[in-house]
Amino acid sequence: MAVDPNAAEENARLRELWSYDIVDSEPDPRLDAIVQLAATICHAPIGAVSLVDADRLWFKAKVGLTADEIPREQSFCGCVVTAAAPLIVDNAADDSRFSDGPLVCGPLHIGAYIGFPLISPAGQVLGSLCVLDTKPHTWSELEQLALEVLADQVIAHLELRRSNAELLRVWEDLREVETRTMTGRQDDQRRIAAELHDGLGQDLTGMSLLLKAVRTQCAEPAIRTELQKIEQLMRGAIDTCRRLAREQTAFGFVHGNLRESLQHYLKGMNEISNVKCDLRWPDRVVLLDRAVEYNLYRIAQEAVTNAVRHSGAKRINVCVEVCGEILRLQIEDDGTGLREGNMSEGVGLETMRYRAITIGGRLELTSLSPTGLRVSCEMPLPKGAVRRVAARRSRQQTRPV
Image (cartoon, rainbow, N blue to C red; front, side):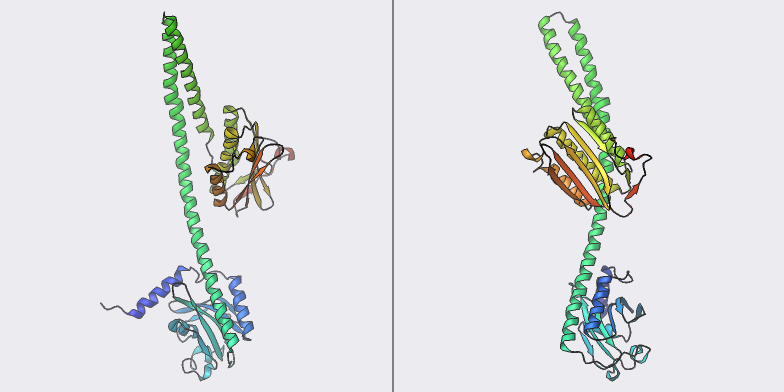
C-alpha cells in the first residue's frame, strides 16, 4: 500500500506537538507576557501563541481574543504550519486565500496578519506566534524582527517546560524505585538481625557452654588455661554478634512516623555506645511524604554513625523543626568535627548530599566552637508533606525525647 508522504510528515509533526503535553493545558503567565509584548510592539489589538492540532488551532496564550480555539481550516496559522515559514499579510481583504474566510468576513473582521512559526529543535512546526489587526497594516521590518525574536523565546520556554516535565517524571520514578529499595532493605535488616541473634548467636552460646563444661572436667591445668582463653574469645564473639543484631534492629525506619523512627534509632545507639544521643522535636510535625521522611532519616543516621565511630563525640543532639516554610534537620556533636577531616571526604558525606538534593534540600556542615560539628539539611516544605500537631503544653515542644 502506498504511503502518503504528507500524511507521514503531519503525523510526525503531531507527535512532536503532543510530546510537549501542552495542548489544553493551564494558562502560562510567561507566554501571556510575550504575547502582550508582541501586540504592543506591533501596535495591534490581537496576539496569540497558537498551537496547531490535527483539526484546530488552540491558543496557549492570547490577547484581544475570547475564543480558546478555532477550526484549523482557512486559518492564517494553519498556513504558517503548512509552509513552515513566516506569513505576512498586510491587507487580508485583498488576499484571495483569506478574503472569503470566517476570520476576515466574520465578527473579528481581521484586516492584517503576521505570524512566525514555532519550530522545535527537531525541526517540526508546532504553531505560530502571531499578531493580528482589525484593519490593513503594513508590518515594518522592526515589527517583523521583534516577532521573530519573540517566537524563538516561545520555543525556548516550551523546551524548558518539557525538560522540567521530563525531569519530574524521572524524579518520581527514582522515588518509586527508592521506596521499593527501602522496603527491601528493611526486610534484609530484620532477616540479618534474626539470623545473628537466633541463629549464629545461639550457636555461639551453645559452644561457649560446652567449652565451659569441658574446662571444668579437664584435669590438665595447661589445657584448662587454654580452654578458658578460648571461652573468653567466644564470649567476645557472642557480644559482638548481639551488638550487630541490636544495631540492625535499631536502624529500622517506620513510614509515617519519622519521630518514632529517630527515637528508636537513637535509643539503640545509646544502648550500644558510650555516646548520649538526644532527639528534639520542637514543632511536633508529622511528615506525610515517604521519600522526604526516609531521606531525612538516612541523613540523620549517617551523621550520627559518623560522629559515634569516627569523631570521638560524647554527646549528639538531633533536632527536626519547621521554621516558616522551611523544614530543617540538624545533627550536632561535640567530637573533632571538620578539624581532622573526618567529614571532608568520603562516601558518607556524598551520600548525605545526594539525599538532600533528592528531596529538594541543601546540606551544610559547620564547625562548632570549641569542638564539634553541625550537619544541617534544610528544604522548602513540599505541599501537603507536613501536618502540624499542637502540643498540650508549650514545654512539651522542646523537651528531649
